[in-house]
Image (spheres, rainbow over the protein chains, first blue to last red):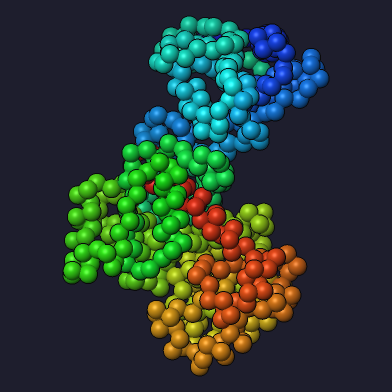
Length: 176
Length: 308
């Protein structure tokens, strides 16, 4: 068992900066964009992207928090599922939603998140931004923005650590 | 992370403070769904919830049904007067038959204390006590506690006054069981004939004078006279009861400035509470009803949402 660092603190922030620019580029600016972070680390990534866009475009994009537990497809197999609050303080109708998560793997979380957002209204578009795409999809879903792609072995765990919750910024592979 | 291991919700008495807080926290996440345009999430898709009510109910049954439906569970309602009960079927046989249809949860209300407990021993489905005689009404106590925490920001340190027919009230009993798990001062008031002996043993103070009871209260809970349990024979007259124990504006002024007035419903306006108080600025009676749906969603989710 050894740990491998995929991104250190500086590289991680550069990656978030690049994703920010790609979001603005693809959408020809930040008009009509809203950010939704998936609990837990997606929230902090969303906040950093929001801050970046404020620096670049001088606008503060609406930001929502999504807990996907109620929409999981394996909920009846869980021993105890802890449900936390979903807080989307804006109308999603006709918005371009940037959905933000830390690691993309099977695609099931994204499926649940899309269903959750659709229950709140009819957005114009939903785009997906992830910090790490570790591959091995079980559903036909792909990110629009990926910080980096790393094909992980099934035994490996890709861990995103963020200052706001973990005290430091890094992406590591455990059990390589 | 808190582990939820219970199959049934039979009473408040056996719950720990941590379990109660876990239910309230879970309910907080569900409250928002009822304010959406599309009031439905797929969480309990494919689950079946039966409400089996041997006593009349508007709020509790509707609340459970709405809670289950908003979680995408299927609900079936059975009430005593339209069921085989009137043909002489025993509760045990009814339960066994219902069990064969493989429900995931049965919500039962019955006039016999302990009926839900008996049911839970003979069926695999989760059993939820929707009120058993004069014993317990756990979901009411949980929604009351949720409302108190929502309005006051805390439960600890509060003075809660419960007024009325304590003897026959399962709501009072469940609330006493829940509030004594927190650092609260509980005062019960009502005519001596409606205060059971040794009530103090449950950890409450008895104060027959309603004015003294209410002084500096943070929360006032009013109860109705339980006519169906012979409540009226415990008092000289309804008129006298409402004169002495009916909650009026001048009482409310003796409580804390930010007191909240609660009532589990159904209200007998003009008897235990005046219109002025029931519809006044301190009343949170309709908040209780709204929160009831969120709390029942949380309970259904915790009992039948995960692997059992």
